[in-house]
Length: 170
Image (cartoon, rainbow, N blue to C red; front, side, top):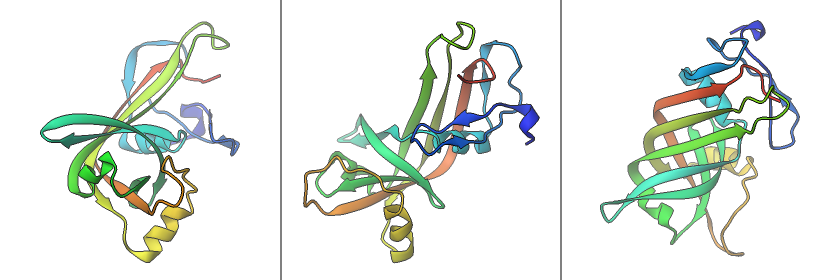
């Protein structure tokens, strides 16, 4: 992808600009959502820190907000024993969703945003080198102090995403 095909997105984690391009998004406002490639979906996931994991518990769907990061194996979530995410730790197939939305403002009054859905197998990270990579992400914990950390990884099998609004972001 060339940089002339898209726009630069800014990282929201304060780490400064992160180059990103989109194929197929017109210069002007796009009234219809534009489908994103798998590569674009993964890159956009790297620009936000909060998403949602959907798991099945007692045959019912449960959607949980999570802080996450990306590593070589996929999407990483920091958790502890005894949470609802335990349902996803045994190789279950889960869904993961993240998005970003910018209200109309400096971009000509047009709302802009994207949405990415990932489906795949979830498992606990246990290998020492992979655990070090997960810990290096610096994911904050929503668990009580002194709780034992566990890292859940979602291995993307199916990706889908949509871009809404204009080509450039404010």
